[in-house]
Image 1: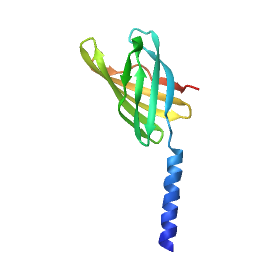
Image 2: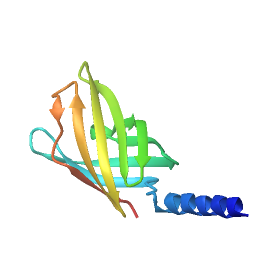
Image 3: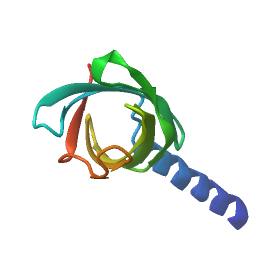
Image 4: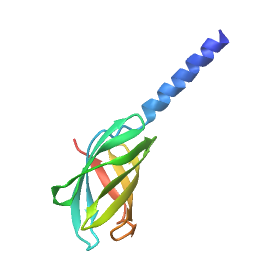
Length: 127
């Protein structure tokens, strides 16, 4: 009997933890500062399946870029986008924190200009 009660308590705890995990599925809008100081709109389309994050980004010029290596862990998410930037393979790693209908993302560039990305970007869930 004690074993059954323990198993039930464990299942309830796991269900509660899943309910607290953020679900980022949907469309998120933000503004990104370019290296020349101009601002550009950026749209993320996320699909979450448990801890796995997939989707795409509507980049500058209307190009759609697939999200790779996406993960959601509690209120944290991370993913990578890769594309050809004028003959250079550009890889941008995004890491962020989810708070309700807002995500704060930081970026790191590999290839292209390299180094840290622009200041953290705020994304808002599209209604």
